[in-house]
Image (cartoon, rainbow, N blue to C red; front, side):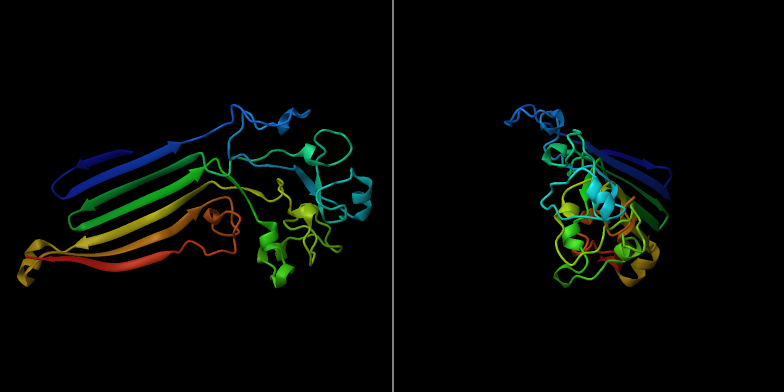
Length: 266
């Protein structure tokens, strides 16, 4: 951690602090078969590297699905509006051999924070930002799927899904289904998202009553303040709090505002 403090005058001071951590990992050796496809090996990749299929788009209709390379991903029942995957090894079918390393590791490789504090006469203010980078996560399609286990449809899905009337091959959600769809729910780039973020974690503004006034009421110190936690979040992901990763229906981080006072007596 780096920290800097400066007293500019008897009435004005400021300070700054920052921390930065970069941590990565990779397999040097891994007991595995000798794959014909080099991308299937874990050697050289992070311990937290995810693997999945490369999603091209959604099938336009059943006719296109029937004329495309067969996809053996837990089911052979799929059609228009389901996810179409890339035949990476070009063997004319989609199998586990087409799974490749996708995205960044699921644990952030970069974690950082920085903050500033300043004071002038009786006023003081402090801010602290916290962030992470080089991290990927996946929207949990099985956990957020509409109509499965009586689940309701999320607004983001309701605004963008494939249907016979709207054959949007880049819609957020594939065709609606009341049952589990292995083809669409497998790990792929379709539901992969960037987990990087910057959050305004803590803010506090205060005012300390001059001592010449507090002495009259037998107090040594009296300070009023307002503080806030999780007030702002900057992220490319907008569906829910990015720190919840794929579990968007879980309990979110709370935004908290407090009012208070610090006092001490002679």
